[in-house]
Image 1 (cartoon, protein in one colour):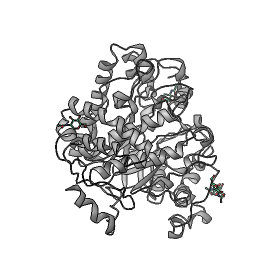
Image 2 (cartoon, rainbow, N blue to C red):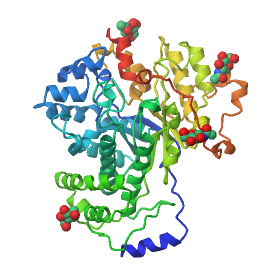
Image 3 (cartoon, protein in one colour):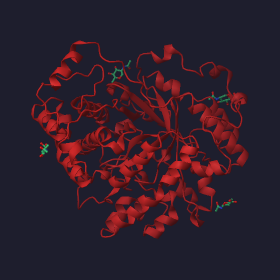
Image 4 (tube, rainbow, N blue to C red):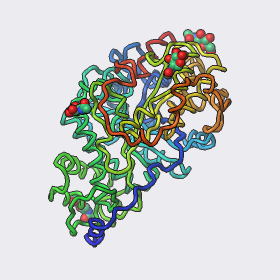
Length: 510
Ligand SMILES: *[C@@H]1O[C@H](CO)[C@@H](O)[C@H](O)[C@H]1NC(C)=O
Ligand SMILES: *[C@@H]1O[C@H](CO)[C@@H](O)[C@H](O)[C@H]1NC(C)=O
Ligand SMILES: *[C@@H]1O[C@H](CO)[C@@H](O)[C@H](O)[C@H]1NC(C)=O
Ligand SMILES: *[C@@H]1O[C@H](CO)[C@@H](O)[C@H](O)[C@H]1NC(C)=O
């Protein structure tokens, strides 16, 4: 009986927190432009599909939404071809051979098709099948996956291809769209634990790159808390416990039909109202996915009793935002990790010259600054070799070494991107040289082994005396109380943070 399982946990010592991450150090790449297509990364393929390239993506067909609106009858078929070809098992093998252990997978809310409010919204259908296939490859290769909610319902930041819809009408920060994002979270959490294809998913990231000015993201702090509670509610029903989270469950919940267990938990209001609302709406979606993908047994009839660890909940770090941002550390219940993105090429980080880049990266304080606010472990979930100046190969080798060295002081790094197109529209390998991990490897700009360097002492000449003492994070810093901050470690302009639009503006002559 389930009740007998719960009871001892209420009184006994809570189990030790599991090792948070499945690897000692994250050496990862993003599977960008796969399930959320950013045309700037594959302009020729996008043009061939029927899309357009322009300097302001709100003004032409340069995102998935506008494409699906323009080609409602053929969009699914055209995208199926893209999903089939952009990321293949052979790509994964190349990454495995190169020592990559983690894949961050950018996803749109529309991968849960029932969340798309047609006909006002339109996106390609069928991505879940390809996600499941790819996750199966990742599992079989012994690699690990982060599901990254990259493109949110209502759009989380203006004028960016990576949100799936290039628009200045940002509607994510509203109750209705927070709700849809929680339903997405409930569905992805359930699949992560019950669909065998998902078994190497270890983390779900709530929101990729929200607007940096926290004054423009009302309710985001509450959403962070609800995101974690939604994941933990589902895990609790599956018998996966984390310390300090012990909702008072009756002993009579179903144990052989997960959607029935969800239904009963909702009718008994076992969780907070926002969480219950999300679980309630996830039930018919899970039943639909169950019948569509041959998972009815797992989701709606077989006994469920997951052997898995709790997922790592993940957020962009508090210093991603400024203007009194909510701190995601305050939302943590169980294992949680933080994500920071760093691109020098958009300006505002360091002067546009090699020495300034090296001085900046070799004295990076972001890990310490985040840890002081409780945002630890941190990883660098996006970075690359791009620069604001024409860089020589020998500089790019230093630049890759130095970034890897700096980010390795944290939980690790995830390169953007695993690949980009090589075509006339990208000036041959010019784009891939600074944005594609596989291309940089083959050009010899990054070492074959992600844990090694061309020069182990690459940062030595640049480390400032005063900051070198704080290279490693002292325990006292990790234990420091959470302080308020108003100074961002990023640029105070959301437009400057993003790669696609800026890249195309700068390079539209390609
Ligand atoms: C499992 O529960 C769902 C939701 O209550 C219900 O629709 C479905 O018929 C149940 N499945 C079985 C096999 O009883
Ligand atoms: C490091 O020192 C150089 C030279 O004094 C200075 O220009 C730079 O701003 C310093 N960088 C950091 C991150 O402290
Ligand atoms: C294209 O790339 C070459 C090097 O491969 C470079 O010399 C040239 O300036 C680039 N052209 C443009 C338009 O950026
Ligand atoms: C921190 O911010 C909170 C919420 O804005 C505020 O209530 C509190 O007074 C601040 N604390 C300090 C030390 O500034």
